[in-house]
Amino acid sequence: MANVTQLKHLEHLEDEMLNYGVEGCHAAVNFLRELAKMLGKQADATGFMQTKWDGAPAVICGKEPNSGMFFVGTKSVFNKTEPKMCFTEEAVDKWYDGDLAKKLKYSYKYFKKLGINGVIQGDLLFTDDTRKTETIEGEKVYSFRPNTISYAIPTDHEIGVEVGKAKIGVVFHTHYTGDELPTMQARAGAPIHTYQKIPEVAVISNDTPIQEVTLSGSELRSFEQKIQSIFQLCGKCGEFLDKIVEKTGTTGDKKFHVASYLKMFFNSMIREGQSVSNVRNTLDKLIEFYHLKMKKELAKIKTEKNLTAKRQLVYESEKYLDENEEKFKSMIQLYKEIQDIKKFIIDKLDKLETFRTYVETEKGYKVTTPEGYVLHQDGNMIKLVNRLEFAYNNFTIQKQWR
Image (cartoon, rainbow, N blue to C red; front, side, top):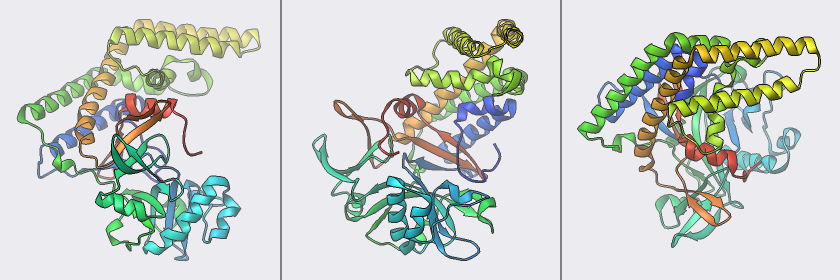
């Protein structure tokens, strides 16, 4: 749960215990306690929430620290060798091609008019050739699909009018601090209120108005009780979680240990549209998942000596599963409880969103939820995503942008 240097990947709340053991588990609890303060409107709450937009591509832009010249690029602007910064539209063609180059040229042409100081990061939402005007559920809207999710806003809405006039739409969510681009630190938010307002650019705010969420006294007490239950499970699983982290790896002997397949297993459940419900059944599915993975890994081995050694590692891992069955069940229960409390929060936040969100299917638009939210506290970030909804769509629906 360290501060983010460059914003390249955020973790799911429930995965932190698999990444960092008991430390990650306690970090998740601390985030949840901060959320309880925020939802309870407590004065000492220091966190804040941003809506996570499913935009693409990610664009880094602003003034290069040394020259003060405006540039655009992707996350590769942070490359320590040969950073791919574009100071002109012509320079875009040196580093990028295809649809990405076209979008970056749009970004350079219009974002340089915003008066951006410093370096910021955002996600593109649309250009005037990808924005559509259509009628969805009897309502005339502007719609766009930058990635997996389709967004729609009524044409007569204040933001819709802005979207209809724009050449490009973007949500800026991060600013950077530091004197040299390769070592800059990511910080939440971008000062969009200081930028020039021009009709060619629709700059969409990603602040989540969490202060508008109202919990009853019983809901807040239930929320706090669930956090306490998770904290107690962290204590029960702590030593085991740390051992799991120690045994996790992608090379050498660790590649054959079940610990290395836990996150992969939970992701596979999401791909199949399954949630963790019955702990015993989930453990059985994990065992089956591990066996199938090992069957494929062992089939790749050519020499009998190496095959014998790796079979022994698999046997020892199977024995580890058997000897620690109750600990694995407690770990799965903890994972489930974090998922459940996260869903409670997301369901409350989803009701605050202005834009309609859909996924495109063969039968037309299907209503879905926003991608999710990012909770910030003291420079740390964690994402809250309804993985069964968004991540399932992300795994299974053809992407609009490549």
